[in-house]
Amino acid sequence: MHPHRTHDRLAYSTAVAHARAGLARGTRTARTHHPHTKRRNQATEAPMDPSQHDAARRTGTPGAERAPWLAGRAPAALWPPHFGAAIFDFDGTISDTADLWRKVDEAFLGSRGFQVPADYARTLSVLGFEAGARYTIERFGLRESVEDICDEWNAMGRALYRDEARLRPGAEAYIRALRRRGVHVALATTNDPDVLNSMRGIDMEALFETRVHGKDVPVPKSKPDIYLEAARRLGAAPADCIVFEDITVGIRSARGAGMLTCGVRSNDPVQDEEEVREAADLFLEDWRDIAL
Image (cartoon, rainbow, N blue to C red; front, side):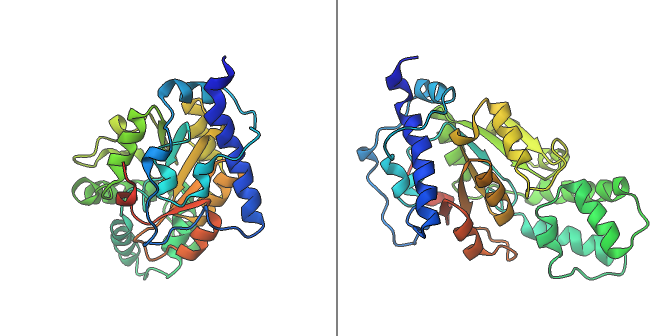
């Protein structure tokens, strides 16, 4: 391998280390975005070509200098890409589905004589279907099985996602642009694959190289397993990855695994935006802000 082919990845690894050192000292310039911030001139930075990404995925050696791109704010720091792999959450990150699951919760609990507690959606947001079903059984003293509850949620979710789920404006364009630049992309979601596959007009299989669901990694996102599995399937080291998430626990676990993180503003009222901003390396308010 020629040394010059790994230059951008070496700089990236160092950028993450230096940025986090700065964050520990209270520096927030790399993590926050203000709506009036101007985008940086794309011409000032040369993007990596696919061959550089492939070389980058085979090295984890830290570099000697900090890459300048991470000093910018999102969305300017997100294009052109300076990472070899990108991992995306689905609900709340690239799709606004909070209202759909609110309908599921209201119908499911309402049919059993319960109102939806204020903290219920926030708790379930980090759990997969099975863990969420177990939590629901314990919290409400239900006599149903985990399998029966998952099947009911699945059927309700499929019906709603089929006709109402949409990708957030700008999200699909960004993902496709990354793939054209040679960046490897994966989905990491606790949602059920049957629910996502029911969506009309969204070909998830074509959009992502690999998809990791809660069924594949049945642990909550407070642990980094689902992100690490996505990276493994892409053949990428954690330090080569950026994770896009809207929940704090996912951001913290991904960062703890050595990945760069970008918090994404969600239209879900359960999101604590300030907490997400504090936890993430970068923060994105709107996918359309990324100047492709």
